[in-house]
Image (spheres, rainbow, N blue to C red):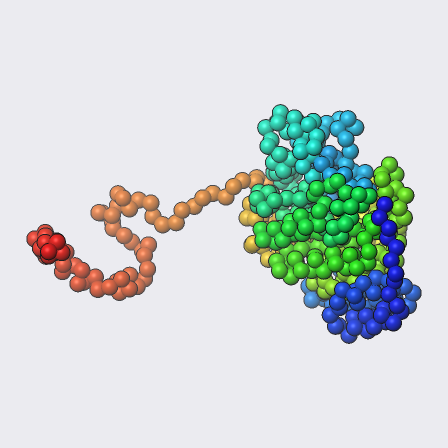
Length: 474
């Protein structure tokens, strides 16, 4: 397993970086890395500065003191995956499953149960391209007429929209440009964790991502850029404590910042702490320490700024709600009153009422959002495909873009928009009777030349036209 030991920065470098952060100065990689080691009074000061930046961003967004969450159901479309991440218990093998995929009726049963409880998000999670590793997955798709897992995911997302009204959020892993375009019309938002930019954790034997083609950092960075080019409201983030050094952790945050500055599409950044799980290759590694998580959240806030939406999963923080709120988060992510966290099944979601109480004790108000963040709801085009407008508008407050908490999802038709052609289509029969009407420019009589002069040439008759022809033929 990868060694996580490193020599820490000096107290002087931490104080110097804190001083720059407190006065609003930009931090470089070394300064941000130094701040990850802040503890005691230095950590308290780091959290204070980061929390102030978050608070300013919430005021600017028009919702001071409001921390958000999304009420969701978790739909594990398939637990098969072609990757071999050494800490994952979600992915499994075909003989441990009743079927390679949930069928459409099972998907809809989960979504309907969530809609009945007022959930508004259907979080689809699944392994990367299982049909490329597992013959059972390939056969299941072939038997039902689907070319790929992505095709089946798209069909299930349409079914959820039409039958239940829940808004799909899709986490299928690495996607190509064309796949992002194909999925955008059926999901208001998508996501993929960057996790890390440390290539050695993928390329070296013993690394947590060794043997996982979809975990190559360069591939995942390309997906972040492609999602921006396609205009997908996107969720990403980092996973800390899997063997990365502090500098590598900071490098990942800088990479996320670069992508968002270029495209503006990263609606949410998750800072998630590694928690060791039984029956995995990394079961003996220590969990990421919570003060380390808080420092990382705070550094992410300093680097990403007041407009960023930063989340820490509430079921992985051992009840330290106040600590993470002080660090600068403004969102708790998706929380389900119905389904477990299938990625971390040993750690149940907090009850929404409990989450609201802890949030209030820390001086904030908990509000429900949709899977697509309010800023992107209000902006509309190009972030939200017009085929999804009826579904989003049924659940969103038109002024704030937040969820209408009392709204109960209901299915709405999803279809390709009608192709409407402009202009008249009857000129071939009416040009000799009614002529052209008002389907031309208002300055038609002058902009194209002197039409009175043209008329005199026309009335000169065929002889004049023939003469002109003879002249040109010379």
